Image (tube, rainbow, N blue to C red; front, side, top):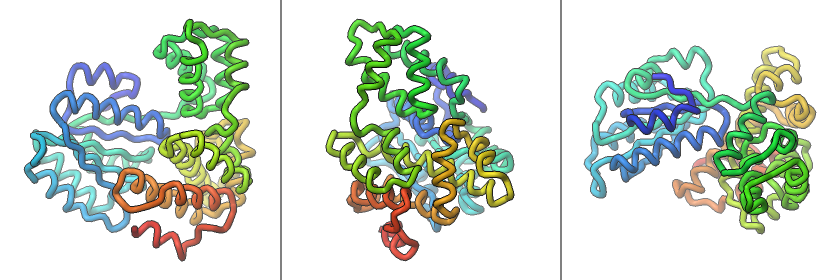
Amino acid sequence: MKIRAEQLQEHLQKQLLPAYIITGDEPLLAQEAADAIRTKARKEGFLERDMFHAEGNFDWNQIINESNALSLFSDKKILEIRITSGKPGDKGSAAICELCSNPNPDNLLLVIVPKLDSGTQNSKWVKALDALGGNIQVWPVDAKQMPRWIQQRLRAAHINANQEAVQILADRVEGNLLAAVQEIEKLKLLAPDGTVDGNTMSSVVADSARYNVFEFVDKILIGDAQSAARSLRGLQNEGTEIIPLLWAVTRELRILVKASELVASGEHSDRALKSSGVWEKRIPLFRSALQRLRPAHLRMLLRQAGAIDRGIKGMRKADVWDEMATLVLSFAGSQTLQPSNIKVLLDN
């Protein structure tokens, strides 16, 4: 069952299906869709949540066994599977098909993957999830859609902004949804009467924190390792949570991995970046990173981001801020993370 992301809340008010798959390369929207499903599930009594990161030599029997196990703490639980590659392999496909063919009414299956190609969308495991539950595809917000998306977010935050104010914010964030959400949160504090015009928006945007997320990411892309590291420390000292920082870095890595694959197949770098969802104004930044980093290095960095994510969730022992600093430096061009030592991090 296909469910549009903007219709998910309405759908959940009516029913909760036994399974959902969320696909797409926009981390903020994918996370919000997953949060909405989890919130509804908790209201329906699914109080436990077991998370599985299906990477490398993952043992898919873990999920089958967990699906059949009786819970000691609650009657119902969420089985959440994250497949960062988007391809579970033969064993994973068979396991997901088995879970869908013999659904346990006390379990809710939630699968989260990046954007899937047409071949994978037609695979057996995706069709099995479609037949049992809901398929939510999360699409990036392009330049034309951005003002409308921002206006909807402002209204949801009970902020009345005129067209000029909306356009100023859209131009400032240049497609970075996380940055837009952060600015809207700031407006809720700085515009207590709920009314924002162009002057107010310009003032708020210009008064951004010294170390903000989107400037931090830009420093990584242009290869300014020292400035990126200082920004990371500044964000940490300001109390910024590591999760949105990791989302922002991971989003850019996925774009670069996709673009690098297109370039390897013979496509021009600028065209590859544009087709991968990069805004025109940001193509030079991404071009710099694409020229600096080889495809294998980009994939290695993406794996390290996944390892940090597991560390944040307590699935492995890690000093996540130190590992984040290593990731940032390597992404920005400093030779701190090599295949010889990344295996140690990924195996922990």
